Amino acid sequence: MSQDPSCSGVFSGLELIELNDPSAVAEHVAALLLHERRRRPELPLGLATGRTMEPIYRALARQLSQLPFAEGERLRERWLSFNLDEYVGLRPEDPRTFRAVMTTKLVLPLGLDPERVRLPEGSAVDPDAEANRYRRELAAAGGVGLQVLGLGLNGHVGFNEPPCAADVRCRCVSLSASTRAANAAAFGGDPEAVPERAITLGLAEILAARSLLLVVTGAAKAGMLRWILQGPPTPELPASWLHRHPRVMVVADHAALGRGANG
Ligand code: GLP
Image (tube, rainbow, N blue to C red; front, side):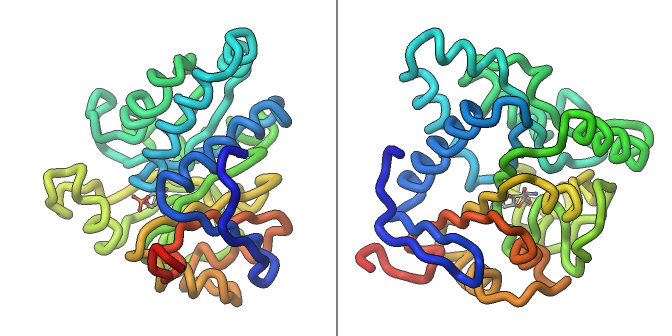
Protein backbone atom coordinates (compact mmCIF):
# COMPACT_ATOMS: atom_id res chain seq x y z
CA MET A 1 0.00 0.00 0.00
CA SER A 2 1.40 3.44 -0.84
CA GLN A 3 -0.07 5.23 2.20
CA ASP A 4 -0.39 4.04 5.75
CA PRO A 5 -3.77 4.79 7.20
CA SER A 6 -3.50 7.45 9.89
CA CYS A 7 -6.35 5.78 11.72
CA SER A 8 -8.47 2.70 11.23
CA GLY A 9 -11.18 0.84 13.05
CA VAL A 10 -14.36 -1.15 12.76
CA PHE A 11 -17.79 0.49 12.88
CA SER A 12 -20.45 -2.13 13.48
CA GLY A 13 -18.90 -4.48 10.93
CA LEU A 14 -17.69 -1.88 8.44
CA GLU A 15 -13.92 -1.59 8.36
CA LEU A 16 -12.95 2.08 8.39
CA ILE A 17 -9.71 3.46 6.95
CA GLU A 18 -9.18 7.15 7.70
CA LEU A 19 -6.66 9.11 5.66
CA ASN A 20 -5.54 12.73 5.57
CA ASP A 21 -7.12 14.08 2.42
CA PRO A 22 -8.59 13.21 -1.00
CA SER A 23 -5.19 12.63 -2.57
CA ALA A 24 -4.17 10.15 0.15
CA VAL A 25 -7.55 8.45 -0.33
CA ALA A 26 -6.99 8.33 -4.09
CA GLU A 27 -3.57 6.71 -3.78
CA HIS A 28 -4.84 4.16 -1.29
CA VAL A 29 -7.93 3.22 -3.29
CA ALA A 30 -5.98 3.06 -6.57
CA ALA A 31 -3.53 0.64 -4.94
CA LEU A 32 -6.47 -1.48 -3.74
CA LEU A 33 -7.90 -1.56 -7.27
CA LEU A 34 -4.60 -2.66 -8.79
CA HIS A 35 -4.26 -5.29 -6.09
CA GLU A 36 -7.77 -6.53 -6.85
CA ARG A 37 -7.04 -6.80 -10.59
CA ARG A 38 -4.00 -8.93 -9.83
CA ARG A 39 -5.63 -11.05 -7.13
CA ARG A 40 -9.00 -11.69 -8.75
CA PRO A 41 -8.65 -11.01 -12.49
CA GLU A 42 -11.46 -13.43 -13.38
CA LEU A 43 -14.13 -11.19 -11.83
CA PRO A 44 -14.96 -7.68 -13.05
CA LEU A 45 -14.37 -4.57 -10.99
CA GLY A 46 -17.42 -2.48 -10.18
CA LEU A 47 -16.71 1.19 -10.86
CA ALA A 48 -18.40 4.52 -10.20
CA THR A 49 -18.30 8.04 -11.60
CA GLY A 50 -18.44 11.36 -9.73
CA ARG A 51 -15.97 13.85 -8.32
CA THR A 52 -14.79 11.45 -5.61
CA MET A 53 -13.59 9.01 -8.28
CA GLU A 54 -11.65 11.43 -10.46
CA PRO A 55 -8.46 11.63 -8.33
CA ILE A 56 -8.65 7.85 -7.92
CA TYR A 57 -8.54 7.28 -11.68
CA ARG A 58 -5.63 9.74 -11.98
CA ALA A 59 -3.74 7.87 -9.26
CA LEU A 60 -4.61 4.56 -10.91
CA ALA A 61 -3.17 5.70 -14.26
CA ARG A 62 0.03 6.83 -12.56
CA GLN A 63 0.42 3.66 -10.48
CA LEU A 64 -0.26 1.48 -13.52
CA SER A 65 2.34 3.36 -15.56
CA GLN A 66 4.93 2.65 -12.84
CA LEU A 67 4.49 -1.12 -13.06
CA PRO A 68 7.00 -3.19 -15.02
CA PHE A 69 5.95 -3.10 -18.68
CA ALA A 70 4.87 -6.75 -18.98
CA GLU A 71 2.84 -6.59 -15.80
CA GLY A 72 1.09 -3.41 -16.91
CA GLU A 73 0.27 -4.98 -20.27
CA ARG A 74 -1.12 -8.12 -18.65
CA LEU A 75 -3.29 -6.00 -16.40
CA ARG A 76 -4.60 -3.96 -19.36
CA GLU A 77 -5.34 -7.06 -21.43
CA ARG A 78 -7.26 -8.73 -18.64
CA TRP A 79 -9.13 -5.60 -17.54
CA LEU A 80 -12.88 -5.92 -17.12
CA SER A 81 -15.11 -3.44 -15.29
CA PHE A 82 -18.80 -2.66 -15.03
CA ASN A 83 -19.95 0.81 -14.05
CA LEU A 84 -22.80 1.33 -11.66
CA ASP A 85 -24.94 3.67 -13.66
CA GLU A 86 -25.59 5.88 -16.66
CA TYR A 87 -27.94 8.77 -17.45
CA VAL A 88 -30.90 8.00 -19.68
CA GLY A 89 -31.68 10.13 -22.70
CA LEU A 90 -28.37 11.78 -23.59
CA ARG A 91 -27.08 11.20 -27.11
CA PRO A 92 -24.24 8.65 -27.26
CA GLU A 93 -21.73 11.32 -28.36
CA ASP A 94 -22.70 13.70 -25.50
CA PRO A 95 -19.56 14.39 -23.38
CA ARG A 96 -21.68 14.37 -20.22
CA THR A 97 -22.59 10.69 -20.47
CA PHE A 98 -20.83 8.56 -17.87
CA ARG A 99 -19.45 6.55 -20.79
CA ALA A 100 -17.72 9.67 -22.09
CA VAL A 101 -16.45 10.44 -18.58
CA MET A 102 -15.04 6.93 -18.22
CA THR A 103 -13.40 7.20 -21.65
CA THR A 104 -11.69 10.44 -20.67
CA LYS A 105 -10.81 9.55 -17.08
CA LEU A 106 -10.05 5.84 -17.33
CA VAL A 107 -9.95 4.23 -20.79
CA LEU A 108 -7.55 6.70 -22.42
CA PRO A 109 -5.21 7.39 -19.46
CA LEU A 110 -4.85 3.69 -18.67
CA GLY A 111 -4.73 2.59 -22.32
CA LEU A 112 -7.64 0.17 -21.93
CA ASP A 113 -9.76 -1.53 -24.56
CA PRO A 114 -13.09 0.40 -24.36
CA GLU A 115 -14.92 -2.91 -24.88
CA ARG A 116 -13.67 -3.99 -21.47
CA VAL A 117 -15.08 -0.95 -19.65
CA ARG A 118 -18.79 -1.66 -19.60
CA LEU A 119 -21.67 0.71 -18.83
CA PRO A 120 -25.40 0.58 -19.42
CA GLU A 121 -26.42 2.13 -22.76
CA GLY A 122 -28.29 5.27 -21.69
CA SER A 123 -29.44 6.09 -25.22
CA ALA A 124 -31.23 2.75 -25.63
CA VAL A 125 -34.76 3.08 -27.04
CA ASP A 126 -36.12 0.95 -24.19
CA PRO A 127 -34.19 1.78 -20.98
CA ASP A 128 -36.02 -0.89 -18.96
CA ALA A 129 -34.97 -3.57 -21.45
CA GLU A 130 -31.44 -2.15 -21.42
CA ALA A 131 -31.33 -2.38 -17.61
CA ASN A 132 -32.29 -6.06 -17.85
CA ARG A 133 -29.72 -6.67 -20.57
CA TYR A 134 -27.00 -5.01 -18.47
CA ARG A 135 -27.97 -7.04 -15.40
CA ARG A 136 -27.71 -10.26 -17.41
CA GLU A 137 -24.40 -9.19 -18.94
CA LEU A 138 -22.96 -8.63 -15.46
CA ALA A 139 -24.35 -11.94 -14.22
CA ALA A 140 -22.81 -13.74 -17.22
CA ALA A 141 -19.44 -12.22 -16.26
CA GLY A 142 -19.78 -13.77 -12.81
CA GLY A 143 -20.97 -10.68 -10.91
CA VAL A 144 -18.71 -8.05 -9.44
CA GLY A 145 -15.56 -8.89 -7.49
CA LEU A 146 -14.77 -5.59 -5.78
CA GLN A 147 -17.42 -2.87 -6.08
CA VAL A 148 -16.27 0.73 -5.55
CA LEU A 149 -18.98 3.10 -4.39
CA GLY A 150 -19.24 6.84 -3.91
CA LEU A 151 -21.78 8.27 -1.51
CA GLY A 152 -24.56 10.59 -2.63
CA LEU A 153 -25.37 13.58 -0.45
CA ASN A 154 -28.76 12.00 0.20
CA GLY A 155 -27.29 8.59 1.04
CA HIS A 156 -27.64 7.04 -2.41
CA VAL A 157 -25.22 4.52 -3.89
CA GLY A 158 -25.18 4.21 -7.65
CA PHE A 159 -28.43 6.02 -8.44
CA ASN A 160 -30.45 4.10 -5.86
CA GLU A 161 -32.37 7.02 -4.45
CA PRO A 162 -34.11 6.90 -1.08
CA PRO A 163 -36.34 5.23 -0.15
CA CYS A 164 -34.83 2.05 -1.53
CA ALA A 165 -35.16 -1.59 -0.52
CA ALA A 166 -32.16 -3.92 -0.25
CA ASP A 167 -33.42 -6.31 -2.93
CA VAL A 168 -34.01 -3.96 -5.88
CA ARG A 169 -32.27 -5.00 -9.08
CA CYS A 170 -30.74 -3.16 -11.99
CA ARG A 171 -33.42 -0.86 -13.37
CA CYS A 172 -34.35 2.53 -14.77
CA VAL A 173 -34.96 5.08 -11.99
CA SER A 174 -36.08 8.71 -11.62
CA LEU A 175 -33.48 11.01 -10.12
CA SER A 176 -34.39 13.15 -7.13
CA ALA A 177 -34.29 16.93 -7.28
CA SER A 178 -31.38 16.93 -4.81
CA THR A 179 -29.32 14.52 -6.93
CA ARG A 180 -29.99 16.56 -10.09
CA ALA A 181 -28.85 19.66 -8.18
CA ALA A 182 -25.75 17.86 -6.85
CA ASN A 183 -24.78 16.77 -10.38
CA ALA A 184 -25.66 20.06 -12.11
CA ALA A 185 -22.04 21.25 -12.44
CA ALA A 186 -21.53 19.07 -15.52
CA PHE A 187 -24.68 20.60 -17.03
CA GLY A 188 -23.78 24.28 -16.84
CA GLY A 189 -24.99 24.50 -13.24
CA ASP A 190 -28.62 23.97 -14.25
CA PRO A 191 -30.35 21.13 -12.33
CA GLU A 192 -33.15 21.14 -14.92
CA ALA A 193 -30.60 20.22 -17.60
CA VAL A 194 -29.58 17.06 -15.69
CA PRO A 195 -31.40 14.02 -17.09
CA GLU A 196 -34.50 13.00 -15.14
CA ARG A 197 -33.73 9.29 -15.33
CA ALA A 198 -30.83 6.88 -15.13
CA ILE A 199 -30.10 3.17 -15.32
CA THR A 200 -28.45 1.90 -12.16
CA LEU A 201 -27.34 -1.39 -10.71
CA GLY A 202 -29.60 -2.09 -7.74
CA LEU A 203 -28.76 -2.89 -4.16
CA ALA A 204 -29.19 -6.56 -5.11
CA GLU A 205 -26.24 -6.50 -7.54
CA ILE A 206 -24.21 -4.23 -5.26
CA LEU A 207 -24.67 -6.45 -2.22
CA ALA A 208 -23.86 -9.52 -4.36
CA ALA A 209 -20.34 -8.18 -5.03
CA ARG A 210 -17.66 -10.21 -3.23
CA SER A 211 -16.42 -7.10 -1.43
CA LEU A 212 -17.42 -3.45 -1.21
CA LEU A 213 -15.35 -0.29 -0.99
CA LEU A 214 -17.18 2.91 -0.05
CA VAL A 215 -15.11 6.02 -0.70
CA VAL A 216 -16.07 9.31 0.93
CA THR A 217 -14.18 12.60 0.93
CA GLY A 218 -15.01 16.14 1.96
CA ALA A 219 -16.83 17.84 4.79
CA ALA A 220 -20.10 18.05 2.84
CA LYS A 221 -20.59 14.28 3.26
CA ALA A 222 -19.66 14.18 6.98
CA GLY A 223 -23.21 14.22 8.33
CA MET A 224 -24.40 11.54 5.91
CA LEU A 225 -21.37 9.34 6.47
CA ARG A 226 -21.95 9.46 10.23
CA TRP A 227 -25.51 8.18 9.71
CA ILE A 228 -24.29 5.41 7.41
CA LEU A 229 -21.55 4.25 9.78
CA GLN A 230 -23.89 4.18 12.75
CA GLY A 231 -26.59 2.14 11.06
CA PRO A 232 -28.97 0.42 11.41
CA PRO A 233 -29.91 -0.22 7.76
CA THR A 234 -32.95 1.70 6.58
CA PRO A 235 -34.60 2.29 3.17
CA GLU A 236 -34.27 6.03 3.84
CA LEU A 237 -30.47 5.73 3.51
CA PRO A 238 -29.67 3.30 0.68
CA ALA A 239 -25.96 3.15 1.57
CA SER A 240 -26.89 1.90 5.04
CA TRP A 241 -27.74 -1.49 3.45
CA LEU A 242 -23.99 -2.01 3.24
CA HIS A 243 -24.21 -3.19 6.85
CA ARG A 244 -25.80 -6.34 5.43
CA HIS A 245 -22.57 -7.21 3.58
CA PRO A 246 -19.81 -9.15 5.35
CA ARG A 247 -16.86 -7.44 3.63
CA VAL A 248 -17.13 -3.67 3.47
CA MET A 249 -14.25 -1.24 3.67
CA VAL A 250 -14.95 2.46 4.05
CA VAL A 251 -12.08 4.73 3.00
CA ALA A 252 -12.62 8.33 4.08
CA ASP A 253 -10.59 11.46 4.68
CA HIS A 254 -10.54 13.44 7.91
CA ALA A 255 -13.04 15.98 6.60
CA ALA A 256 -15.62 13.31 5.71
CA LEU A 257 -15.29 12.00 9.24
CA GLY A 258 -15.99 15.44 10.63
CA ARG A 259 -12.47 16.04 11.83
CA GLY A 260 -10.18 18.96 11.04
CA ALA A 261 -7.00 18.32 9.07
CA ASN A 262 -5.06 17.97 12.31
CA GLY A 263 -7.27 15.46 13.90
C1 GLP B 1 -23.56 10.23 -8.23
C2 GLP B 1 -23.38 8.80 -8.85
C3 GLP B 1 -22.74 7.91 -7.85
C4 GLP B 1 -21.65 8.72 -7.20
C5 GLP B 1 -22.31 9.64 -6.21
C6 GLP B 1 -21.35 10.63 -5.54
O1 GLP B 1 -24.78 10.78 -8.50
N1 GLP B 1 -24.55 8.19 -9.35
O2 GLP B 1 -22.25 6.74 -8.49
O3 GLP B 1 -20.75 7.88 -6.54
O4 GLP B 1 -23.39 10.28 -6.83
O5 GLP B 1 -20.89 11.59 -6.44
P1 GLP B 1 -19.69 12.56 -6.10
O6 GLP B 1 -18.49 11.72 -5.94
O7 GLP B 1 -19.60 13.51 -7.26
O8 GLP B 1 -20.04 13.28 -4.82
